[in-house]
Length: 330
Ligand SMILES: Nc1ncnc2c1ncn2[C@@H]1O[C@H](COP(=O)(O)OP(=O)(O)O)[C@@H](O)[C@H]1O
Ligand code: SF4
Ligand SMILES: [Mg+2]
Image 1 (tube, protein in one colour):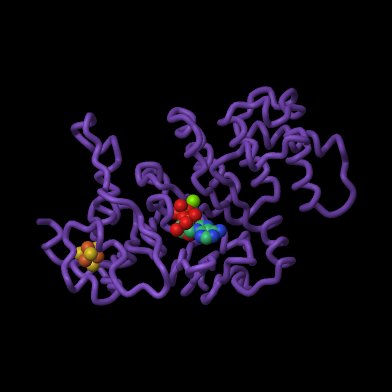
Image 2 (image 1 turned 45 degrees about the vertical axis):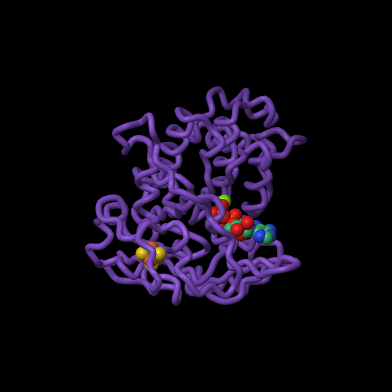
């Protein structure tokens, strides 16, 4: 493992519906170093949340199965961990925040109580109420809640969306996790608040010495924050590389499409590019390039079998038959 905090190998998480098997995460491989920020990007339906939830065992075992693979974290394989082990990991080691804070927060407890609950689960020994209150207020201040000594008594509905997400972050940090998974943490927020919340996550990462997995459908969101990026499409990683690789030398047509769809990179803002078509839902096993139906470079070879990764440079690879060819620039 070296200095990798988590290592995912060959992860396959499939959903079983009445009529088909959906390979939502299909042979996912990545590792993350301590202190690193890893971005996972791709349009809605590409499998990002499935990967994230698989890491912490938040999958519904009735219709979801981890078919294969390993998730190595601190000497255990989370893919095979018991529900009890996973609960312990979630309460102490890996925290996750979601797109909609209001749904995740309890309507019946004050925000202070919800932070306290996590801290109590995490601490050993007797709780000193006064000290606990101080710690909660300090944590609320760290996540940028103004007048935390008053807000500690608030209920979720009394706070704005941005403030609710800050409380979610406080709850996630209350157990001092090693890894924070932020799944579309700003998607439900308006643009100015988005930037503030991202800035907050970035600052807290250093202060709490965490590694962060930042998930977004918007490549622009992860641009300033991530060390490495995985681009997912249709359940697979189609390109991975450093932030520089992805932005300066994208080698998969899908990555190129996502880049063109970022508003600020487009000169003519009136007419924002979007990749034609939508993400299809695949049925396992898949034996074609998953992007073929939307790809401007698709040819017969692309539908013969699923392309392998082509190495572009150190840590940079793309799953396209033309990844290292000039054709893409045509
Ligand atoms: N509980 C479920 N049952 C069946 N299919 C699901 C379920 N959750 C997600 N899916 C399907 O799995 C695919 C990936 O979904 P998801 O991981 O949520 O993608 P993303 O987070 O990138 O939007 C989609 O096709 C979605 O419809
Ligand atoms: S393998 Fe073919 S269809 Fe797939 S991304 Fe490359 S050119 Fe497009
Ligand atoms: Mg999602």
